[in-house]
Image (tube, rainbow, N blue to C red):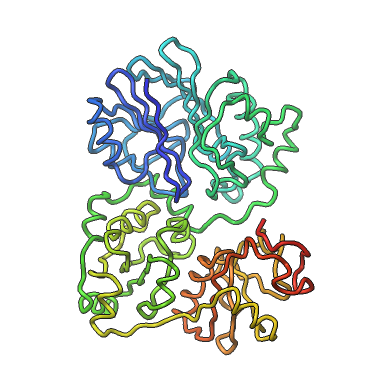
Length: 473
């Protein structure tokens, strides 16, 4: 028996490769199929099943392409209605994989179709559960992503989740391994652990949602309390996973087109393409193509793309570090942005060498910010961190302008005013500044500083809401 977790950090997502006696099951695959197919071929094995735990909202699954290329059967649990062929499993149904057995445990709550797959080893002993977004390490799936107005509320789903956990999962032996679909950083839960697996017995002791003395009413209140609105792209990704999508091979071929600076400029002028610059933040602010938007590949790239580009059908032109152009197209496709139409050959340096117009964002470090602050030159300060971070601690008189919801709050900033912008490290403030710059805001100063470790003494204590080290919570 081979069980391998394939974890993708930028999405905080875990897919699984399970093999026994030459047969393979893939659970919750990402869009790109090559890694799974290659792994099976290297082991002389055949992919037999593709188990989906639910309709994923935070990424587009690779189940359709993988099924077409391998002949594997797509399996969903009860209530999963799709526009394509699949096996709709019943609660308790079993699937043989070599010498192993998968048992379907319908565990609605995160979504109505959410299903946990219980793996029984060669002796029939309960070995592991693949819980999708039903049970995370330290948390459970949020119950507000699949609610339907007037039909099912998040409280209804939370109640279902309580029953699923108590009746289907917590009854299993304590030594069963828990393999979830996500870890810390995913928006599918509230407070997931950085650990990506655990044993069930430990989760019963440490996971707030599995407390033995918790009533259903307490569970519903705790699970639904403090939920931020989900990213807008979540519902769109879930729909793609239900209805189907274009082959990843077609998407890659279209997006990985190398364009000269002249061709790139023509494409930008003659289409409604968004120019997406994915280089490092420090490199970007020194020079970029006018009206381009920065979202760095080395941050939480795909979730930020999903949160900030409202239209999945948006055509996109790419400026990437050399050698990472196809990676960018692939990572866009992971969250349903399939309309990349090419990248700048030779990158930004080639654009500059061609004498094309460039733009910059004024960016300062900590010392310069301190000086400006002490000289009372910082009249308007935009803190682009999350509301929860801002409420925990922020510079006095700073305006919370969270990057997550920048598109909904553009009316709160004035093009006639000057703004300083900061986050925690400078990544989010650079993204926000690029968006404002592209929309005609000129008087911007971006602060690149490690605010995590600034002692209060560096700026007068009275200028902080919380008299302690300025550290994000």
